[in-house]
Length: 221
Image 1 (spheres, rainbow, N blue to C red):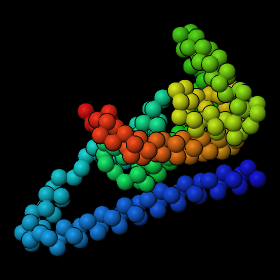
Image 2: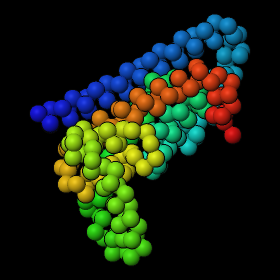
Image 3: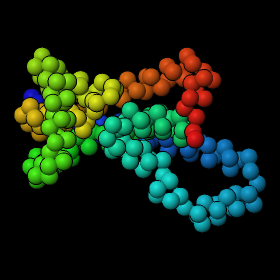
Image 4: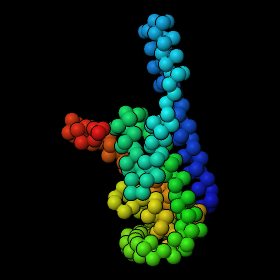
């Protein structure tokens, strides 16, 4: 049952990404057609030559930046989604889809690293002391939810967009509490989807209710 649920969530995530890409490509095609009708042939030729001669560097690609921001601890999609929507002025669907997929894939990677390399890292005294302090905080936050709701409790901890929560701390909590890889992956999918819905909702509600003040607070540097 758990394995079927995990496969279903993976398929839904991939379908979301594909749908967002189709939507964005159709919008871009419509904008291109409109521009071609309004401009002269000479202008079209100059625009085409400029596009072919100056490709966008990979480090300036907005999707690459969104993925990189999502992979940063303490930020994750809580930061990358608002950044993509408000700073890059992108449509919310491809931004959310990109951040969600990156955050979901991050979970198994962190869990694998903890399982395989944590015992080597803890041989360093400074890192061991930091880990012990971190473990105490995470256990206090995660254990009540897991004790009551199990896998969904860990997913709720990952999904609540508050300081100290997220995939990184969720992976540490799941590892310490003896979750299997499949159970943690399900909790990651549930938590990331909850966080994405909450953050996206806050972005739109804040933009509508606060108006100019909201735009001044989030304006690009």
